[in-house]
Image (cartoon, rainbow, N blue to C red; front, top):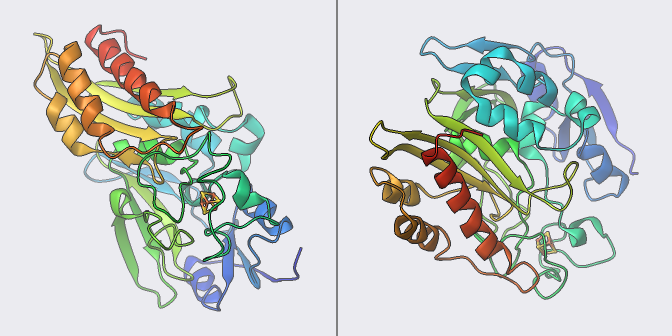
Length: 330
Ligand code: SF4
């Protein structure tokens, strides 16, 4: 591991200011960053420890939503009574990820920033455009079974690994930040991540030293909340395909609210509002579901080993819609 300077912040403003030097990083749970540092994939010259900041609260907003401090652990967020009662899609997504020990350490802000699990990204003697821009992407013609089929580019096909972020996307969460100059901004989660294009090392719109302080959920959305995750093992495995769904069905069997965000298939948490619009107001018959799946997967591109994700996504979409219509919930 490369040597680095360490400082512990006592206030958000101080943290942001401390991180204003080039190649500084924040550390909270460290469940991804420490692995990356040990492998020298990330080599921050300075670590700013934010674990002592007062950003571990969950509070209600005046418009009925929820404001989650960046340091709220994944375990605490999943177990919070408000989240269980009103945002079960989020609770289920979090509990579908990692292990109890990791969820006890991992934080809300850190989860949004976790990096891909593409094998080549972690294999430092191989090329990887995300780790070393311009070096190439061996995954495209190599081991790509777990990688993305949507939002890919000729530079990178790495999937986004987070379950929590997929649920956040279905909920239209917003990310609140503090910049090094003390100014704040709010970023809709749909605008937070960057597609790889020809710069796969740039994964989100955060500026250098910009600190995530909170994630805000809008008022609850009624309907069935589910998180379906298809994976190789029953626990401690990343999604091959997952779906965070919020679906409300009218008394006469029509799909009313339809929100569908997908994990495991996109280079960012994947949501296509046109698919939701196509389904809304229909009775969700097989033909409509097929049209929705066609639209969702119109631009999908398999790379060989991960071709199976295309039919698997179709089946997962169908399963989720039909379960909502059957009124069986999660
Ligand atoms: Fe690197 Fe992305 Fe290619 Fe994986 S898919 S090797 S992360 S450039």
